[in-house]
Length: 286
Image 1 (tube, rainbow, N blue to C red):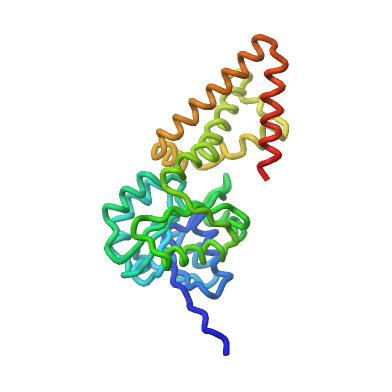
Image 2 (cartoon, one colour):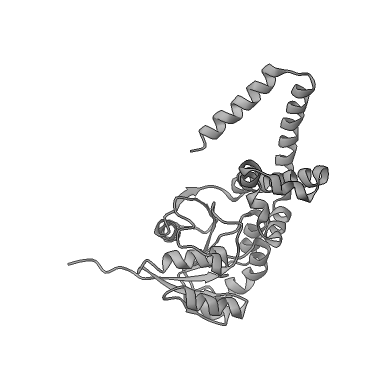
């Protein structure tokens, strides 16, 4: 006799690119009962039409109260604003997680208002797109992606297992990490690259004018793709991870100064070594 599959109830708060993609992926798995909420009524209507099997509610508390797992799929400062309302409606034994790109400020806010008998596990899938909105959502967005998990103080094995089930269901690979280490790592893996992409575009336009961008080849186009992402989302990221991003900028400035010195001194050996190191690092990225 086959064991009965336990149906997990999940509430996804925010149905844009990330939340919509998560819901789309989980809709293909019968182990998950989907409920969703978004502050925008038009987004709620689109989600109901585009995501099979999802139950959309107008009231946030109604979605949260019946869920085993609640996912904050909104920009980090919006998540910080919503935490108190969400926490107040959590069922006993429920787990709260998120998809936010920074963790420090969110973790502190959650620690101050999370009710007893519930748990928080910070989450961040290293996936995304320069596109936005539920119309850009894809059930394959998280396939093969690293998904950082940052267990909070009240997290038990059963709570972690629930979030792991979600991560595995969408084809991602979990990696346990502290919230502090998460912000240090993502400042260099994600946040600084976005600033560099913007810097490259500013460099071209300020020196050569906007028209020069039309002549760009795949190198500049590929390197600066992420600069086309929504500005409000990235403002949230930069302003909630300031210290780590500033440290990453300092490190990059040291490297650029080294390159500048090598060029100024026509130091071919030094320049070759730096370029070769970067080439090897890129090959080892996987």
